[in-house]
Length: 319
Image 1 (tube, one colour):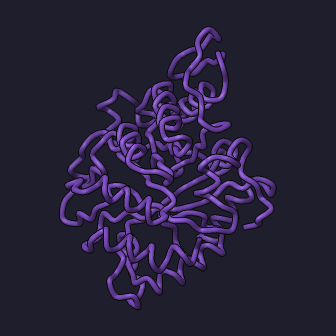
Image 2: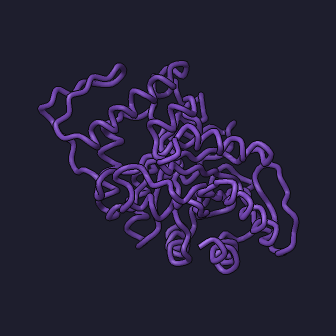
Image 3: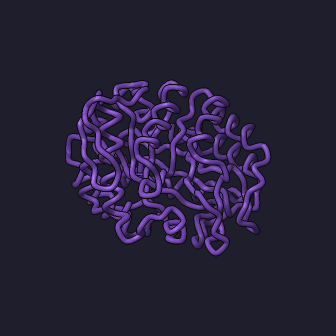
């Protein structure tokens, strides 16, 4: 990735520029900061202390998933707490680490409420918030909200347009198709702590890559096929243009093997010893991966031990 690319307008001074840097690779953690391979529900034991530890150790971001309802057939309720409430809690418990949603399910949420919550967390955290948005991955949730699963892509675009309008304009005029109308007599406060709040896509959101490149500040997808990753990143960068740096990252289930020389094992996520992982991640950094969000949900090993080892042996190599 060319270092000549610069962040989108208004983001050079924000947390976005610390988490996502041209030619660099940073690491984040998906909450809960806990392994629970034999259950669908974490205990949330010591979650605040582990978030503080991740902050102290130099991880770039904490990512909070939006899982409104427990679906036993899906097998994972994530961090249990509402992501916006939890983001505010973690912001108060940490100092530097970015806090992002991964991501808010826009078709199931009122967009003005999402914008109000996001901007409030952004102000309270002094600009450490990143709004990640998605369409979710659980069709079973949609009927509970009275929302049609089949039109989720259009609702997503509509909700996103409302969010960007009320976040970036004062007393806006806007007509949405699925939500409401703004006639210029009302304004949403607060606004962003910096020039504007960074917004990233989490998953495809039912959209074409060209749409994501035009409207989003970055893209975090799932763990991609190793052979196809360079072509995917090239396609993304081409869609973003040669001047603007819009990062690509991925999230993955992850388990750090206690044996440093253990080989990488692919399956439901990424497992391996640190030496093989360092080699893989150096290669992916050179291919253009800017951020990796590690989900310890499948880990049998202590998360505290894993993040400490990553901080001691891996993060310094990518700083």
